[in-house]
Image 1 (cartoon, rainbow, N blue to C red):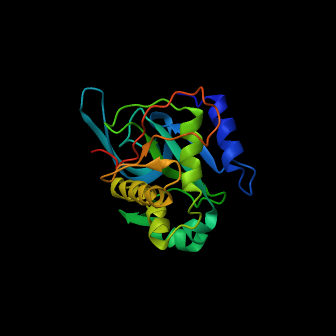
Image 2 (image 1 turned 60 degrees about the vertical axis):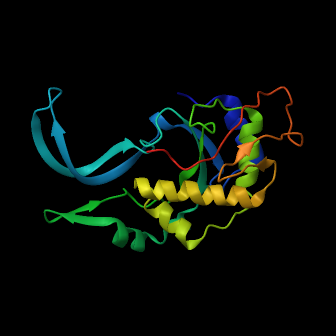
Length: 213
């Protein structure tokens, strides 16, 4: 699903651009977002018959744990992933005597990482509205500095557990911010938008919760 133009424009207006001229925030449809992963792959025919085992890098779904959801992503600069040398040392795996880049090439222009999965407090799909987009971005902006734990989670973002960690840490950030958000029992629910523009926008409740299994 293509991101609506107004969402892209609104995120650019609220979040600004990074040093490469790209938006600091963007919305992606989870089922179409991919990434490069290296490893050992088993290929099967459509009927389930094993064909081969191959060691290589492939482009695979990035948010396979969150199918058919809008994902708000935040851009991280290259230095958040360490130096090219440390990236190579930490992400290179040797399989059958062959060096494999587990996370693909070093992100020289940085990369976009999970900020929030947009869904309601029951885990159901929620369509993006202008006030939801602006509210989430403003809450994330209350904490611009990523901790060492967050940087490590970003480095190994392709593991399900790391995606859960990123989601939980951003939940903590929002809970501490207490801007137009408030909730209870670990839920962060969008309920008050009197300080945000576009009063005509729909206002479903939005819970920022840990990814579901």
